[in-house]
Length: 210
Image 1: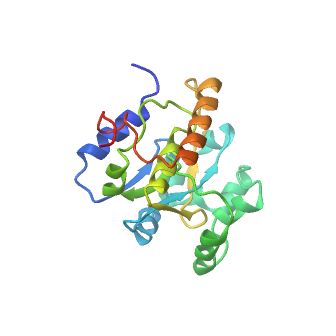
Image 2: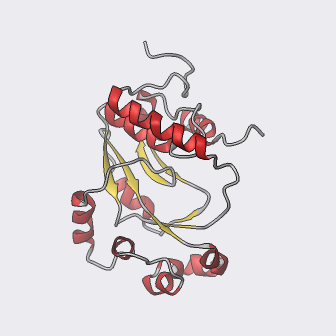
């Protein structure tokens, strides 16, 4: 156990996958039955997609059962409201209260920075190989955002699935979170954005770009 090694295992998954298109989720999220279909609907070689989270607190997480997930009840607006998860207008929109065409339009026009989210994102495998995958030197705390910036720098632009492919996020402790690492990661992401760098030498292939 070397601590938080998520980027390393994701790179191993990318390297060994035989799929052309990859969707990334975390083990602490619940996905709707049409989640994959929405990611596939927007799949393009020159795009990566990032969805959003509806966060449950500890009490709401404790109330989740297998039956609630299997029935889809845990994704319903009234259940989420009853358990305190719908705390603002943006979260309400994530519960899909409006017709699908309108939500798709809001996905496109909402002025939120496009950021790769490790719990809900997708891209073509070729695009991920183009930037050498995730930077394994980065540990927990914004390490996923670095990938999205480098993809953008490589000409693969981000797009939102903010209101059309949200996932429900379960609460849990994060003993691996380190404030100093999080600050350092934020600084590195800013530097990557400024520099236009797209390749990481500490990715799937352990070498500098040719």
